[in-house]
Image 1 (tube, rainbow, N blue to C red):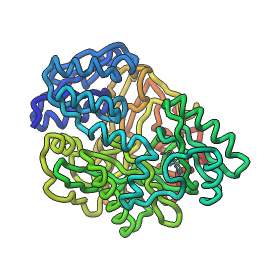
Image 2 (image 1 turned 180 degrees about the vertical axis):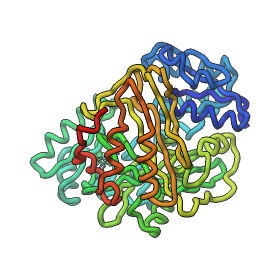
Image 3 (image 1 turned 90 degrees about the horizontal axis):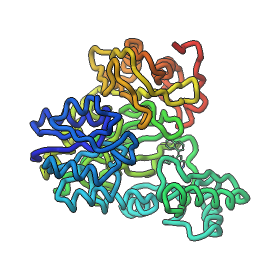
Image 4 (image 1 turned 180 degrees about the horizontal axis):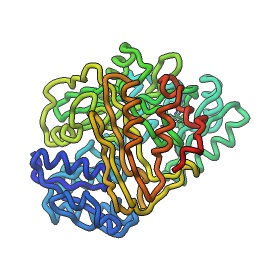
Length: 451
Ligand code: MV4
């Protein structure tokens, strides 16, 4: 097992990793920017090293400073959390070059999944369902027009270096193709330094359903069922749950098996997530694979009673996964993201001082957060300040428990997403479980709930 782990992250995920390390008896090193000097991850780690000024680029993304901190403290592994350097192939390679175990996949695997057109081609070869469209990158505008005719409009142009919707264009007819082609290439080139595009038929009103996988260094790969993340706004997830309210047991099994084939085909190691589009006909298609622990991992932890960070650390240290993970019977879990944002003002970030903070409690209520009364939310990072996760025997019980827990959650001094979640829990369509990724766009937020 590792002798000491450095956590190359901040906020709730840094705390989450430190907690498991302590339970495993592994000493930890926190790194922090000057904006985070009073943070809980700094307080709860065994050692802490300042790696730079507030700007992410100069601190949490500063590979040289993080590797230096790792070497000075004598760590033998780095946990990257999510975001920042978690899916940075260069950083994974840099760790390897310095004989420090990167808790995650190799640079090669990160690159193979980071290039979406390459990832899609390897998934197709592994027998994972993919959306009809181009086989790899588009060579020209003419090719895009030919393939769109074959697939049938509407189609999507997607940036191969993208993900999260950047460099993506929906094209309804041939006469729109040239403008879409030019603007998608320009956007992708500017954002990623890679203008490569591929084409897919547009899947109407899909759900976002993803499978958690875990793979060891001995060729074992297992899945831990699905999370439904259909409730999103501008590619930001707001609610995640498991099981998916509309998936048949048959489809659930097929999707799980497809995700395991996906992981095995690339010799995957560690925790990963295979994202699928699930359409109204009950068909599913590979979207992308995330090579990191995800924000919403607690939902899976609650329905499997497994510590996924512990599993990540164990497999990174070369231990075997001895048997498939067993989910609990009649267990349903849901997470809502608590962001410091004003939902009544286009979700504008609301950084600043939390003057009073009270977390909900009670049976099967979990709050993962680094916030507390008096905490100053810096303006430099992600606006997520916590996650509320509740569990129960069925979806209705869980939604009612979530509504109760949200009523107990008091955050004063900054605006948060709590008022939105309270209304969502009372919404008939949300409660029915039947909706698509378009749901939040047409959701009518009632202004009177503002406090
Ligand atoms: C799609 C799609 C429909 N058809 N691909 C959004 C970001 C990137 N991960 C892929 N995305 C989509 N790809 C085809 N062929 C619709 C989306 C999409 C979406 C997917 C999941 C969750 C929310 C979404 C919101 C808008 C568009």
